[in-house]
Image (cartoon, rainbow, N blue to C red; front, side, top):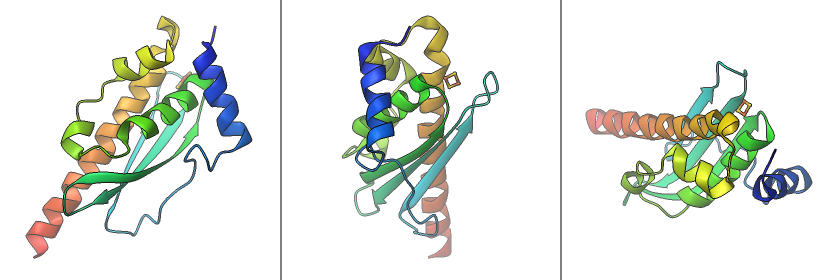
Length: 138
Ligand code: FES
């Protein structure tokens, strides 16, 4: 059922997780935004962290931890690629369909890419809250 792309990425993560950006940044780092989402349908969980240059709102690095199916893990590796180097405004344009299309996810697995889009939205929300707080505090 999985496409070749999903299988390759899933195996890549198993073999060399660091190379595929599995891990976490220090959550206390003020330039790190975190988005965590769970899929009620299957119980899988995805945590995405963005390291952001506050001067230009550009994502300089990405890490994730995903407890879930092969499609969820492959979707996570895909958003790492899609997010690195983008500004927050550009990141907002990434949709679950982009991830699903890139991985050729079958219809039954589309919710795995929805989980990825939700994680991105939550991380952006976290960043915008942090920026708002910074502005309020300064
Ligand atoms: Fe749960 Fe894929 S089956 S995210």
